[in-house]
Length: 151
Image (cartoon, rainbow, N blue to C red; front, side, top):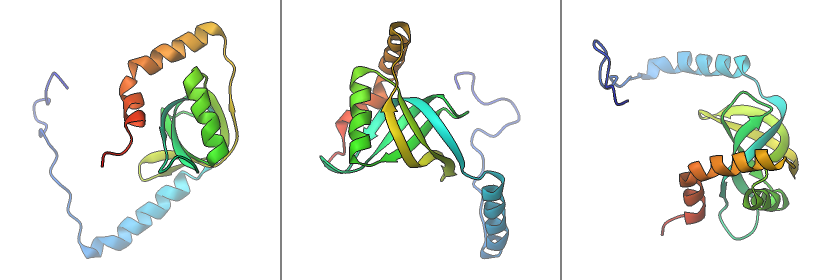
């Protein structure tokens, strides 16, 4: 980004406008896209980088930085209250979390649906130190998770 926009390229792409007549083609493209990339069963191991829920109890959403199990950087997982508690504890002690479910794309993000078998993963001391260092380098995620919603 510091190098600027290359010669011959617009600094900002022009907005794309659609008309009502484009809707059938867009629906067809969306359906084709879903067929081309169906949900797949996976077992993901990842470091918890964000925890969010609407109240002090109940289900919540966790963002994992994927370490193994899928070729994606981050994934969002909705967890029930017990699994969310496990994820919170794993985050506090610096352990990765292992989760099974179906990996799918929704709205440009990767989500794991039908999450089950949520458990912290024991790692050796060197790997744990590396994970903690990586989390400290991304402290903005942690600050956002702790800050909560502004009134």
